[in-house]
Length: 156
Image (cartoon, rainbow, N blue to C red; front, side, top):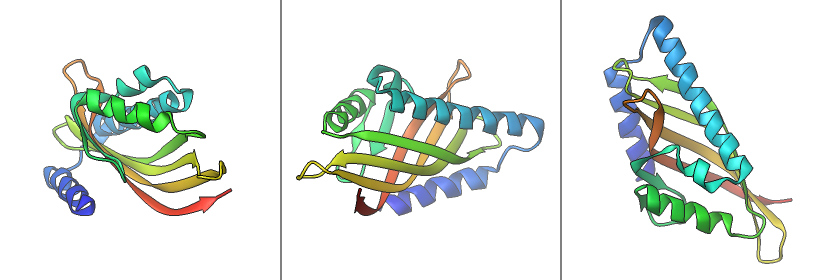
């Protein structure tokens, strides 16, 4: 279901068309920089700063958790996740695409999540993510949909 959901959004963005020219390059770069700043906020552990990257009406599809709708519910999900022993999260955006309209885009990349298993050992989960972003009236980008897909588990 999540794959179908992501496919629909990608098709919509692709149908709208990608920006071209200098503005498109700067918009894609701005979106990548926003995603990287978000990753830095996540690495710092600053939950308040981290949640500022989501739009008020955003939706988060985190594997194994109920769908979180709205910034408050997403903040609660982030708090629950971060309260787990050994929690750490890092991601790296690989690409950004901005629609010709300049007000929608998406980023995708890889992530690594670690929490301790029942024996207290780090359980590393790696995967891929897609975030759909909407440009705000002030020119900033806010995530409106985030979805992650885990790969196989591994212990270190």
